[in-house]
Length: 433
Ligand SMILES: Nc1ncnc2c1ncn2[C@@H]1O[C@H](COP(=O)(O)OP(=O)(O)O)[C@@H](O)[C@H]1O
Ligand SMILES: O=P(O)(O)O[C@H]1O[C@H](CO)[C@@H](O[C@H]2O[C@H](CO)[C@@H](O)[C@H](O)[C@H]2O)[C@H](O)[C@H]1O
Image (tube, rainbow, N blue to C red; front, top):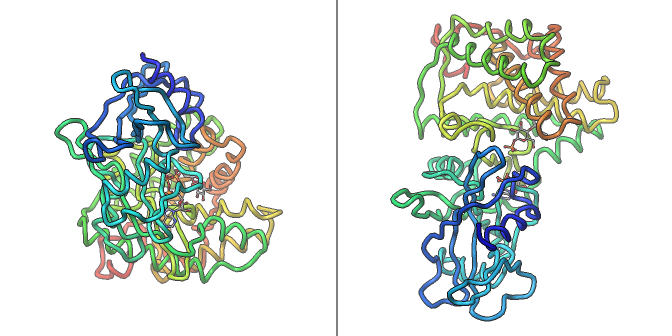
């Protein structure tokens, strides 16, 4: 380990985008890629792929953007050391506006000279602002090959998703083209759907119209995804089996689920005997993945659930996975209300859900399938909250116990038609989707 490795290891504990803070993970290797900037440029900027190893020997890779300055580093830039050969000051280029301007000019000449800033919001990547109209997203945790989000946005090319203007690709590992970032359209005047929905719920302001429009947007994106990547069918028995296995795995970490396990499994078993159409989906659709703007709803972050492997996140699934993600999110939004379980918050969430389902499929919901996916999502959320926000675990646990006691809204909602086991058994398929 070198002094530079140690300096980066210490720096990582201070940056927002590093997900392993406090885990004891250390930088054990730095692999420099080719300079982005032309020869002899000062500052010179390149990406380096860091290998991080935690105390249990598990490794992961992060992209660092690094600048070398012949002279002094600019004020405000984080200096990590000096190059032993040239003496150049080495900075974290994402803290170094001079280096960022050079990086943008070198990698995206169309944007040379556009004012560059660093996005201040909470996020797991690093986003640069390019004027008011574009965002340059630098991926932090990287895996070889195409980035899932970029792949989807490029294939969909606009509509209810941001348009990608440029793709930053590196040769890593040598011989593999790996997405390291992209420039995409910055949605003007956007507000996060979670912020809007929780404010509305707290004030008991009806959200049904907004939710309806969101359902329409999701449906359009699903149609685009199907056109771009195709569709298949999957056996309901297999899907129920996978959900049951996820529950089994969750029971180890969340013993609170045990008393509801039989009832939850019965929900999954309702899928058995059916064939479901599957396709590429969002995979982790919730209010925080939506932006409302004067232009309508935009859906972002097609990365799937963070705990899944890239192959799992690319796998086809039923569109009801995304529908369930959003209906669960309306249930979460109740937490912003002064009395989350009272009649005001419950009515708010029911109305949002009804509006969303009407927008998505005009109420021709497959109730049993939706309930199975909502149950699977709630089990995932229990685990997610225990690991990340233990104070929030009661929110999905409430859904788990409602489901277990048969009080889940999906079982008695007026807009719901139960098309159990009929997805492939009639000629109305396209209307039922
Ligand atoms: N194209 C966009 N236009 C406007 N704001 C955006 C756009 N993409 C993301 N954002 C904002 O940035 C935040 C973080 O974006 P996200 O893609 O979820 O980052 P990360 O994947 O790094 O966590 C979002 O919640 C949203 O507020
Ligand atoms: O946004 P990510 O892809 O990182 O998704 C993960 O974190 C989400 C929380 O930020 C989590 O979503 C859960 O909490 C939301 C409120 O904060 C709520 O709207 C969602 O319905 C709920 O699932 C998501 O599950 C997780 O994968």
